Length: 114
Length: 114
Image 1 (tube, rainbow over the protein chains, first blue to last red):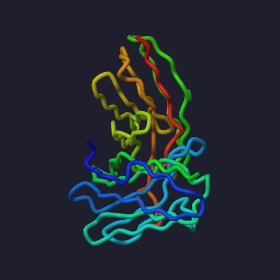
Image 2: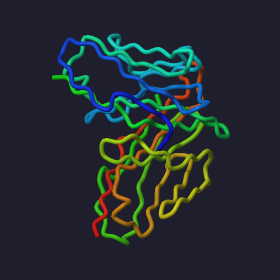
Image 3: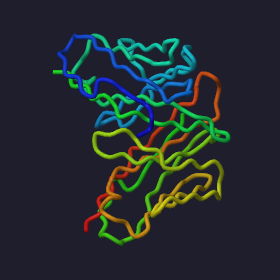
């Protein structure tokens, strides 16, 4: 158990709809990262928040947005869903070790868009 | 742009048959190279961080090594429970906009048969 929690585990919805994925980082971790894993693209970085502020953006679509709240939990909002958005969505939080930041991943949310 | 390539894509081993997985990377400056294990439908599980060429780390039957262009994950006398996808990722030294994101390779699927 990494200590990172994500809800829900599974989500099935229709095209055009909007969903919210939730993540709580490990106790004490200030950074939250979101990643998308699909069969054809592998694990792709979406966005990073640090202590409530957006820190970095990756391959995140304009239809997707995220925020980090004062209690450090984060939400990823996906709107106008398309079939191609079906994927596993992972959240991670990090701890600094030496020069790098080790990231620990949650169990993921499996999104199916029908 | 940071790139990570893993080979082979898949590996079938007999129990006890040692082998190595390769991770080739290009990055402007390496903050850290990470190995993760991922079981189907689960979140990546952190294994190792390597920082500099020549570094080695071990955990049970796994040993990771790092050169300036590659990393290897050696599996010694594997057991069926070592069956999983092994992911390699790099974290770059970069500007603030890059954050501390991980860039992942496509993974190597390992199947160990009894």
